[in-house]
Image (tube, rainbow, N blue to C red; front, top):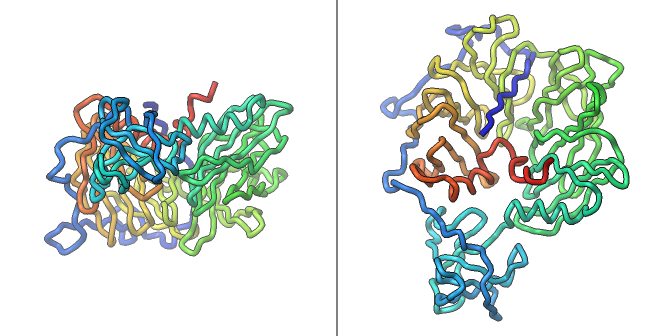
Length: 442
């Protein structure tokens, strides 16, 4: 998989100047179970290998019933599972398909986009895997069919507030940009934006709270635009004027939500300056302050705030990076990492609870302390990702783990990753949701 590191120079004011390495302002404490602090998550001891689900789950099989869910345990069409399910409320339109029995107390007893539910017929297990969400590939095909003949070129897929959004360029009857949305788990797409405007949609969709942002790039470096989708409403955001080269936005690097629900962004100007922006109630963005840090791989926290690996703008390029976090987009807290190992990724809920992936291990920052997680880093390019349901996944080249309560559960390991891991990766762990629909691209 191609791995991309996005770097931005962020110039945010720090609340204190005492943040040099080893200084009184830096915050880099560590903790251990003996010290009474938070404890790390080990690998779940009862799991030595993952479940590989039969490929025929979800495939059509002939069956009918007057019940909403009825399974037959003697299906000759389902040669691997032997169970054909009638699903009267199917999210895909295929009301009868092969499935397996499951354990409702185990989160991983069904494949992705299926849930363990009780069914009403006696010739099969009482609980079976029921499809609750359409396949991403089906989503792409449905969105494409809505705009047949318009030269659809899908650019980005975003997910927030229980909805999925698709942004695409169209070429006929004239060039333009469209946005479609549907509820997660549903199949009814709605066209909510159809405008004849030039520009290419950036694949790096951004989210803040329930909002999804799509950035539009013109042919040159001036006139970048931002559109915001919430529910079925789309607004064209107003960025600082192009007449001011110091504040005209060349690119929005990241959008995030503050602890009080305000929306903030980091922007880069035509003049190469970096600054923080705030969103007004009608979608007008304004510059709030210049920034004086270099940030690498800036990311929003899922609950609120901003994180990045960073160094001061006046520090040499070989200076050891640290971690910059902000709850409000104004004050920046600088934290020393737990070791001098190469910094790879920051991900988490908020500045008070997040994970840091280093070359030598995965660490968690909680209660002001660093703890080392029990999941091993076994190759040079592991990936940490959070699913829409809040589940945390850690992937290496050979294995996929999910954080289940107090331990990391191994979902697959030391085998071909074409089945479970590939499916999980498309849904959760790829560089972006753009990967899901890449078959539609040129």
